[in-house]
Image (cartoon, rainbow, N blue to C red):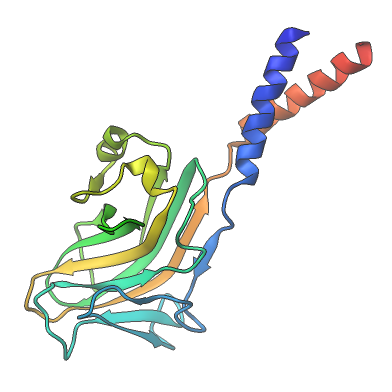
Length: 220
């Protein structure tokens, strides 16, 4: 009976952790920018009604601005994109179109809420096609710094630990890096961030535990 009680506590903890997961976020930019704005002072961000994947999309460039940053993109500080990210696996995906310019990196970037505002980023691709392409990454918010780096994440100078980042994230950002002092134009569409659900086998295991607990109570 003691073993059953211990198992019940474990299963209850797993289920409670799942209920804390954030609601999935999905932006197809058909109706507008939904809180996404320029990620640098040299970046323009506009909503385009057509030409996306499909329909509307977020258009970003550095035209008619200073260009020494060599970066464009978009950032969101809204409640669904900052603050506490639930512990566990997350998948983030986005469609990108590198319309014009010499690009060198495309980063999924999260900044930590502190005086330095640095964070961690993941390079989504090293191929920059002028066509809509989907990029995706799955990561665990409880990873150690070493685990995050091993899985392709880069820590910016003076940033918090990888695990601490998700306890107080400041921004979610798509940063498209190119050659400084050149014009860059790109499109962003279908941004999606969601917690990865437990596999069906795990749910079946937890359901079986619940059944065993119910039977043991009847016998008691």
